Image (cartoon, rainbow, N blue to C red):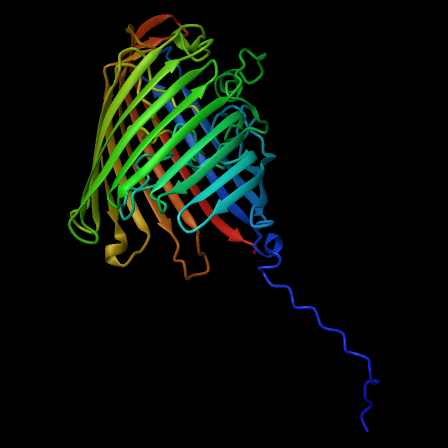
Length: 463
């Protein structure tokens, strides 16, 4: 006979099992390791004796460990990333290679991200306030176009991820959101400090770029209270995007930017794309970044205008081209991102004062022949009519650059899902009259720069 429960005593109710909805802060958490390894070598030599030659070289392995929680009360989450690099090739005489710590050629580790995030969303809008150490990514690309990255960071502040070991991170308060069913995106924030791509410290926005990279062991020579910025991107339709931004960096410079991008589609994979952009920059306050040969104290103001064309007449062939003119008054600067300019190349980045630039390129997409996610990109560009800091009597030699990139992303259903491999080669020829600051004289320059890079990246989620 089975025993029975005493009469008058009720069995205690069992608690309902916890679900993800009950514990989102823990159950929606994620963590992982983004593996990276990179090699960089850039060398230059000229025919004329006495002109400067250099060799930058380094290789490393590392990446970053990352983690973020789910939302507490459907509102608050926290996250962070630990960046680290272990040297593989570190010749002491060849620093400044974007991989190892400058100028010491050693490895490092740093808590690059540590932030709290307050977020709200419903069916038609989304808003997020992020406070602390963070990566700032204001990219939003045109859909169903091949070279969606033609403006890279798409902002005057961003990650500047040149596929070395790490991107830039910032100490900041940022506000980001989406409105109008996601067709309007806004970004705003105030940034106090930044960590350069291969630095171990967060420094003010002058020290992190201009002073540190030029005089790593020198005394501090300038201070800035930070940057305020606002950016808006709007897609009035699926094939058009308008972008505008303004950035004000205390005692350094103001940066404004306008861009219009439109795609004419012929069928699912064939299209023609045209973009145009305008940029204005001027110094403010103490003008720490202006002056002849980078010396502070002289104000500047400059403009740049550019056009971009891209087509896909066949699924395997994507030709593209761009051109731009920069004011004679001063060069274009983008110290806190790769920038939204069309004129960025593999070695040459922003346009010098007075520069006339054109660049042509083409991508071969091998997926049409069954080699999915394998592409080959070649470019050639010329830069002429250049001068130093808006001084036509201080000329810069003409700049011609050719480059090739081979990129392969491994199949998403294989053992190396998310693995990306890139090999890059570029050459720059500089020829013509060149102001040599170290000599205080104009010399005839005939020099070549060679740039070789190799990098691999793999995102490994833990949970």
